[in-house]
Image 1 (spheres, helix red, strand yellow):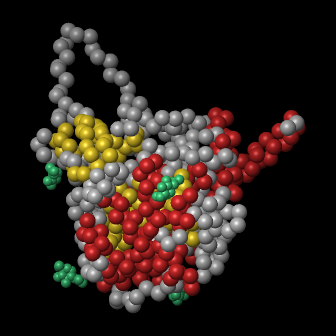
Image 2 (cartoon, helix red, strand yellow):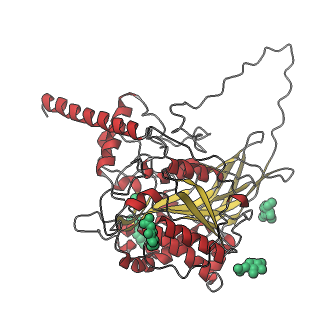
Length: 506
Ligand SMILES: *[C@@H]1O[C@H](CO)[C@@H](O)[C@H](O)[C@H]1NC(C)=O
Ligand SMILES: *[C@@H]1O[C@H](CO)[C@@H](O)[C@H](O)[C@H]1NC(C)=O
Ligand SMILES: *[C@@H]1O[C@H](CO)[C@@H](O)[C@H](O)[C@H]1NC(C)=O
Ligand SMILES: *[C@@H]1O[C@H](CO)[C@@H](O)[C@H](O)[C@H]1NC(C)=O
Ligand SMILES: [Zn+2]
């Protein structure tokens, strides 16, 4: 290319960048955080008790915010022993972000039971997932007595189902609109699936209330497995969504694999092969991408910054995948029954995958639970932490593994174990207290205290506590914040903005 062309290109790119940044800045002006006390895990006072009369069966039609709220309240009134409704906060326009717990002990966590979540409709115009989750709630509650698998699932798992993360967007989206962006964003124009802290690139997007609510939620409950439901394609996509690549590699869409590639590929396959057609990997229309087995690595399809699944995985050790469940984002209501037939088995089957791998408790020598111990499976350097009851869970395929545990004031512990296909491995780990350092005699030279490294505070909103394992004994290789600032930061930022303009498949 001639130098003049380069200058022209740089000028155009530069203009775009300034323009998009300015828009972003203006949109993000007034941020108000959701009240901090809205969710205390397991505290019944935060559950919704606005009980209404039992509703008839859920229709195959779209449910707007008020119809959805009525349905959820009716369900929790009709099935108080299996469901409990709570809100994790409010959207920009003040709509509740509802979550239904479905479990045989809905108001109380049973120690040792893993938490699973589904989140739908974070893109407000991707509406199928929202209705699928309402049907899923009804299906689980109504089949508890008669379906052995459903009963086993609800007796051993705590399911959290969020039919809509973007209720404001849904209200302005239009039925029958298969593509486009109307209703995709929250009411301030932000794409919620680009609004999370990112492991590979700095994310400058203003933190939105819906995102903040989800971040608080996932920091309070240790979710082990989850999926978020979208539309615009038919594929199960798994982390990483982003890659450490620069702008020039971004457009080649190379895979960005996690150390848990085997597990993610398996989980995505469980969904696609339990789905009526997803596993066939057919294109949505001529020329659209095909997907072997109906699964893909996120970045191999197209990379994005600030997505929710990478955040769940890196920050909280939760195995999260993205289900694109309909070629048309907002199909006519007459098609919903077919979508339910196609997805029901997959939705139910996927949640059961949480009962795979290893689990147990971390305790000290006095048999007390150790909270906040950092753990990792050797060779898989994305970690996870114990809960306040000392519980931990990790999904793994059959094989031999080594687990490492680190907790302040205790010696590190290392244990070997085997995972089999049929049931999770139970492994309790006892930590020994580190003996106190021998007292330093006054005659010896004083030891110099090294200052602890401080996290770099770039933007308080966008930089939450560091992810569970980053900065720990073994960092994920080849990743990190190397690109921050400087010329590469500029380039990746520009390319993200451009990606956001063009790449809104799902
Ligand atoms: C929501 O749906 C209900 C029932 O389908 C309807 O009566 C109501 O007018 C709708 N509300 C809005 C704000 O569209
Ligand atoms: C809920 O469980 C309690 C105790 O097992 C039982 O007495 C009650 O009838 C159940 N309620 C419903 C609505 O099933
Ligand atoms: C697709 O699924 C089949 C059957 O499970 C498996 O043998 C094959 O390896 C999978 N292919 C890819 C690329 O994952
Ligand atoms: C592991 O610890 C839990 C909680 O203290 C206990 O209930 C369970 O029996 C222990 N399991 C084994 C195999 O030691
Ligand atoms: Zn989407």
